[in-house]
Image 1 (cartoon, helix red, strand yellow):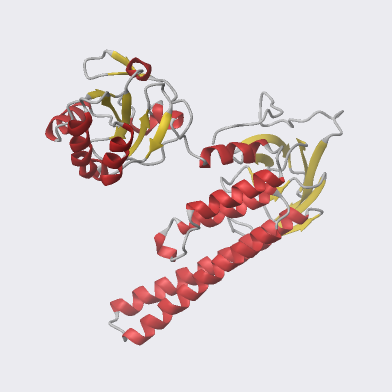
Image 2 (cartoon, helix red, strand yellow):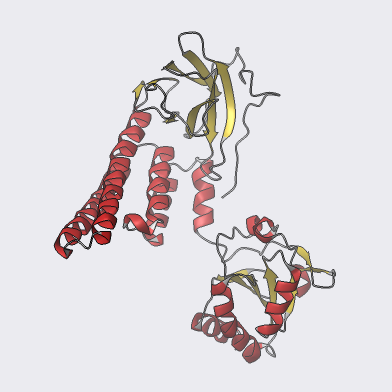
Length: 381
């Protein structure tokens, strides 16, 4: 999910990146009080990469007033951030051409306690969601701290169970709040923001918040893409969620243990399982016996495996390959998560694999355990 629309750029973020003659733009302005900051930045947060991009900056005047600008375009999320902080003061949606955000710091505080939004319905809805949702997270965290203290003090189970029950109830309320906020949203950038905010929090098991199932997320994104067919960010996310099956496998060339470059395309004409793993990955090592079993069963039926290691230690890579009996071709650039294949195949965890047919098309992914052998039996008749 890595697509970035062309933005206005400038040679230095210390100057305003704007065309004063361009009326097709949004303006974000307001007043920041009780701060020692000198500069304020406007950052775009691309829907697909989430990597912040500075699109404008300006010096705060002596009273803390500012005005920032960005080119108008499809719905997206922006942050405003002060030079002294890595975290933003506020996030906003570009659903109107004129947005006011006022904020004030308490003496010595690093974060604003609250901020005021004017002119943008989407930004106000975003703020209301985050304030409500974060409040629930704080309540769950407070319960967790109390539970920990009570357990250390050997308190009665009833007190601890009451707090656990309270946390479960709050987690359910956070889920309900998210569903309601998504139903209320009429802006694709806001919807994706809420969806991502919830899912990223739910990925932390400590809060006890249940993530939305993948099928639910795909359905929501598909509905948004249908409702906003011209939104390029949504189209990219939709494509990524659909997975690689049915698409041509991106080609790559990596060195084997002897330094010889091996390309994926050199396996054209065979069914090939591209197996992404690493010697340090315990789930990968646990899965290797299943991969070995499948290889030995189907290697004489126009099938092979290309092992791609995300290691950085060559000896560890070689030793693990020999110890686990991985007798097929292996390659690695020894760059771990900086390997070229990670963004190419959008790998966010290993073990991971893709099964490619003789034409070079991906026909399955993430085949583990019995599923790998079943799929191979299906296609290698």
